[in-house]
Image (cartoon, rainbow, N blue to C red):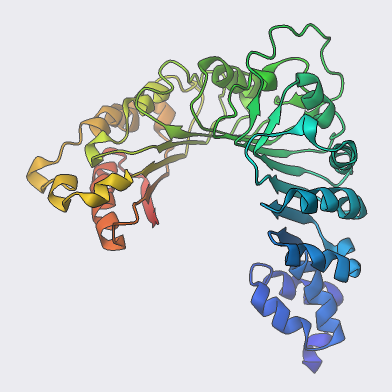
Length: 389
């Protein structure tokens, strides 16, 4: 203890930084002495999650921690608590870097939020240190409101919008001039129902995608926005992932020919009934559109298994070795074997999301089928895998 305190302050801070993901250890350290409390507190309170009235009240009880908070996650609180936090506490978080708001009521109309609540959000986005925003369950009825919200966020780098909806065909009647001030996004995630998003591609939108490095899109896509988002990202795009892909989705909707610097391509399939259904033809179609100068190093493939499979016998789910059909993997073999675009492939990452009725052993047995064929198809690449319940 005595020798530790003799270390320079920056080295002591570096030691505590290694514990930043272990909140329990940090809490123990914080009660050893005043010096350790001061070292541990910035990591303990860097991210706070408000998911109950009790957690919300902590900020009122301990106002001194507000200067330490860098990220706030607001999950499913009653509307009055959310409004109180946004109007009373949020303006006091002057060093905030990230905000995650998930409204308890789906399709909460942003326009219906109290004026002082909307003003508090806008003022937070204008903080020079603010770089990350997550919004879930919000509905906008006007692109003008959407544009106004993000026009005050010049430092925003990461945006994730989930269960996010817009009014039908909102862009067609808009003839305003192009926005002059735009946040230059580096990471954009659009999940579950938000890709009526021609708004995001419209000149009036105050989001600049020309520096986008990571794009993750999901839900049931409209083809045009997907193509436009990929085109707007252009050469800056390094990582792309298509989530919730079904067999009929994305046909002719993905074109990676404008993204010469891609290093990672990923897909998440929904409800593959047998290993031979995966990868679906969409993967082959997408690989064919990769820019000639692109050299992806990582291929990510995840898929969900229909929960109904857990109610059927395993003999119906897992074929015997003699019955295996790797037709879909074989269709990818030419890309991995002789296509110069995939000559730098180093990793294949496989993830299986399995049903409640399954055991982990069953899930791994199911996944091993894809592992073996991916090893045979993408020779030379390291194949890693995991199962998630």
